[in-house]
Length: 127
Image (cartoon, rainbow, N blue to C red; front, top):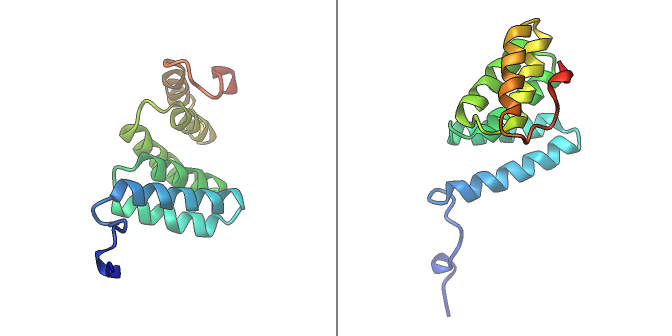
């Protein structure tokens, strides 16, 4: 009989990617259920554990936008875009956040960058 300690369990410290994925799925469920307080706490935990997790920073930026914290929104989305510049949805959200601050030239640059790979969720007419 195998002891519980020897059972092949997920080691969350050595499998950070799997752990982060599980946490991101949980946070997304809260986010979709409009429990942004719970989602935000989880996204912060993921971002703290893995400072290079673009998805966590992106979602924190979206929550900041919902909360009306425009400068923080831009900061978080810029960080997410630097971590993963190939994700058009991050660049598009950054463009919208910059537009909300009246930074139209920067918004257009972000929007143009989001359309260069052809997978952009919105078009430059969004600006």
